[in-house]
Length: 386
Ligand SMILES: [Zn+2]
Image 1: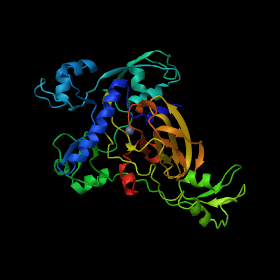
Image 2: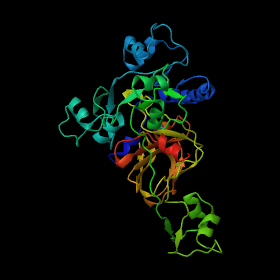
Image 3: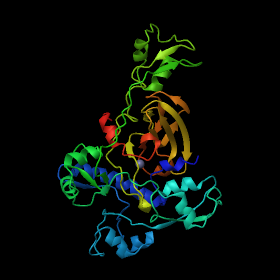
């Protein structure tokens, strides 16, 4: 489907870089844990982590950019001094994308965070609906992003503190924290994109009634597991004296489901990684919720769900929520059935499909308020106790 790859948050990087990234991410987290109390600013994910034997020249040539550009982008004064484990931001590059069978221009544009018009113009495509399989498209991240930010943003740099940023932009630490779902103002991440004003978006749907009509083959245990609640909870809510006896067509009240907002993954480890740099000048459009493979993934709200298998996002759900927001989760290991779901319905399980194949299993989770551009899901996740 045309919109499939909008969920893809990673990139056209090689598998090698992906695996470096995976190792980085584990290392970064350990560092983050260790340093959280010690420093105001914690270095977090970047596009490339210096490996043993690397030189700036070698890395620059690998990305097809100049040493000067790479040094400038990372505030490196002496290009001969880089440290193993150092994180480097890779500045904008022109990428060549070879069209694969089944891809649409819209999909490709979304994948690289550029517009269809930009790609069409850069490649002399007169009819954007007609692209040839195998064609090599020039994608430049100097082209405008698909969705311009609604409010001013700032990317955290090394040495920044929330107080210093607040002072520079004539706002307060509290306002910045509120706008970005920051619970501990002492910890901000280098590379994170902060919204400078406004309130952080929080999805908070009004409670709705939830009911489930028993179908052929249903057992109470399977229904309970679908909603992630106990058999006894459903039995009690419906005055069922014998949980083994339910009849087809019977309408069951599902306590808790369909009301409020349910965490998509219970007990997931995550941080405010919205806006972290990704290759090609793009930024992370969601939060990564890390959990063991096979951990259930639930619908945060009721709505209409579809499932896709994308080249980058792997198995993914797209939930058009009744609360007016679209929810996207990618890299699923398994997925459920499409159609109408109540909040709390199991949509699948955590995995690492798509381009997350070399990373630890996680749900890449996005919220698109009013079915539009993505907003940082972190404030929503935190405010619902995830
Ligand atoms: Zn992600």
